[in-house]
Amino acid sequence: MSQGWQNTACDLSEHATAASPDASQGAEAPAAEQRPEELRLIEALLFAAKEPLDEKTLGKRLPPGTDVRASLKRLALEYAPRGVNLVQIGNTWAFRTANDLAWLLTQEAVEPKKLSRAAIETLAIIAYHQPVTRAEIEEIRGVAAAKGTLDVLLETGWIRPRGRRKAPGRPLTFGTTEGFLSHFGLERLTDLPGLDELKGAGLFDGHLPENFRVPAPSDDPALNDDEEPLEPADLDLGLAPRLDLTSDAGTCE
Image 1 (cartoon, helix red, strand yellow):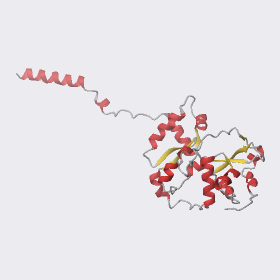
Image 2 (image 1 turned 90 degrees about the horizontal axis):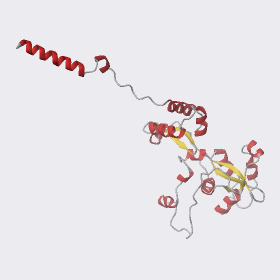
Image 3 (image 1 turned 180 degrees about the horizontal axis):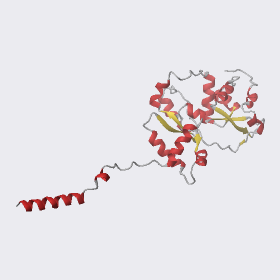
Image 4 (image 1 turned 135 degrees about the horizontal axis):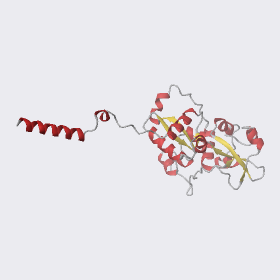
């Protein structure tokens, strides 16, 4: 009886030893999945950059064959629940404080200077109608452009000279910048509110002309057929094209 019980105990012990992993192996936790090296490189580049970077610029610093867009999308998903988010701004990418935590930075924020009504209207016209010339802005507003209005918008970095219209006088055409998208929290121009959204916000009283419509803004940076590139002198002088804007005439607002 005693011998039979001893044999049974030995059999059970051997079976348990064969079925169980080695004690030292069982103590080891499975290795955590490692993040692809490309994500770490992109993360480092974006953190170190002074301004948003586009995919082409990032691709030049990454190993050949890296799918930059897919890596950015994955990194954006990883950062989505964090205090800092990876966001797309036009054709570029950057880290930004999460929108719901913006209140934390209110004390450090610089109080912006308020734009005049004329500047706001001019900016809206450029955003929705670009590329647009000064004369076209005046025609839409129904009043001559105030001296310095375009200057202010150029200095904020929200608009830029795009090219020159193929018309007498070759006037400058204007469009918005990625700085405009970044400031107003837009990924692309098509995120601007349409007519229904503007009505819902109470910006229209309902007494609109029968054929009234809000233009669909375009993100295409390429010049239109009726535009030609800026001249080297325009590019070298930066905001020098403002010299073309100072000969206001008529009633200004």
